[in-house]
Amino acid sequence: MDERSRRAFLIGVFGAIAVLAVLFFVVGARPILDALLSADPALVAATFGLAICWLAAWSLMLRTVLATLGVEVPLVKSFFVYAGAVFANNVTPFGQAGGEPVAALLISRVSDSRYETGLVGIASVDVLNVIPSISLVFVGVGYYATTAAVGDRLETAVGSAVVLLGAITIAMVLVWRFRETIIERLPAIIAPRIGRLGLERFDSETLEDDLTDRMGRFFENIERIATNRWRLGAIIGLSLCGWLFQVAALLAAFAALGHSVPVYVLLFAIPLANIAGAAPLPGGLGGIEAAFVTLLVPTTGVAASVVTAAVLLFRGAFYWLPILIGGASVSAFGIRTVT
Image (tube, rainbow, N blue to C red; front, top):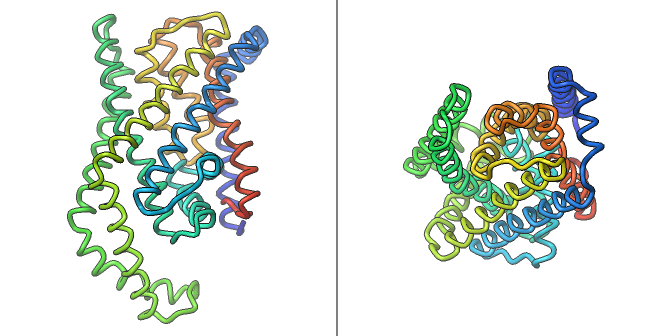
């Protein structure tokens, strides 16, 4: 880890600690602790078991994407590869955006594939996960609107999510529409600058040709995924399964504390809260927890301390468990530096 990466990591960690400290101060640390101590161990175990199911579903999703690209990864190994990718996302700022390069390196190392193929694989998983999440948000909010008035806070959250996802979609469409122009012109802009930084031993012309070749293969791989309809449908189905495992896990976390909450609330709360993962915090740590509490307290009617405790159980399963499994996987696969 170089000095700049170390500094960014430490800033992110301190930021996450600060956000969590504010959350505990506002809600009250003692009531949260009391709620956690009252949790049913069997249902806590169920929460963690459902997190394993989520990891399995999305690792199958990654395996299917890679198979579409002609890269075969054994079933069990794909689980640990995806766990390693989640680990990379969880320990770098900006979530997926920060962890994808490391995840791509891990995939290419394990499967002996090109780096850009691994990058397309993990990026496709992250992008395609958005499709079911949008559907769940609209289904959940739509049903919630038939049972209660949609408050300003929820309207703002949904509106912001729609704007953000819309902007991302438009950017992706534009990049795809002008991909040939990007392949033709972008390497000529990047290569001389990299050469001047001394980060590449090749001359600018050789580097430009290499970048052009890599970017061409990158877009070809994306096209292979998009045009294989059967596998694309299977990938989106596995993504939906992963989201539903998350919903079931949060239901189990609330049940562990002796409370039940409407399923339709969790259908939109989980995707919306995960958008906070784009914050400059390691895997969104702190930001996602705060977003969950902000969304769930007014929509469930459950005490803030209980909501916070349930969210901490849920995040223990979906944030810290993948760090343990994925960290061991990354080390075993020989990737020593993750940030």
